[in-house]
Length: 208
Image (cartoon, rainbow, N blue to C red; front, side, top):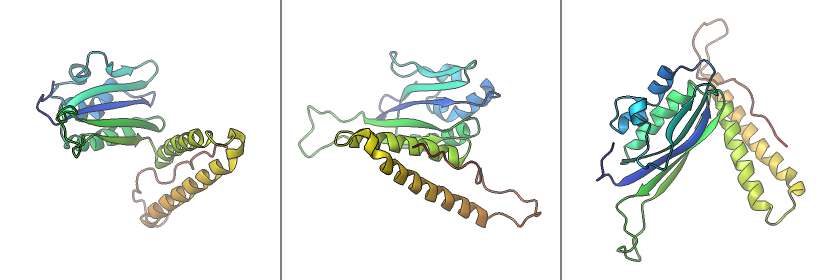
């Protein structure tokens, strides 16, 4: 499937709720940066992970759900494939979703490494969604979860409402700034020109 001499083993993990009208052909094209990178000729050919105990790339058409738990050998150039995959999935996603990507240093030998040497492992959290608001909602929910889990070690959960409110305020400011930046490039009313991708959309929900 892949180059065994590649410096990284790259694991992609996530679940994306797709639009109900998504076809297999559309999904195959959106995921081509993944299976194409693995040297496969189709999604069916490239859906298997490098590890047999991982389910790989799975699509449930009745539930319109894409699940990915897939590993490939590769290099830093895989990051470009990830960017292309995200752009493709943005067009098919029903709602925002997070995708975790881990680069494991395949060349690092812990037993032989000196005290000064360290693995070049890296971790990325990618986000896809139909609009910027949908993506920000996922980012906001993950941040709230992380912050609350951390602070509950020291405070009762009922005391953290103000913290969540402050996080919501920060994301509202980010959303308003995004909308303003897109408004600048919008043509005058009645101009008939196209605007930037998903600029207006819905404001992220504030969950207290």
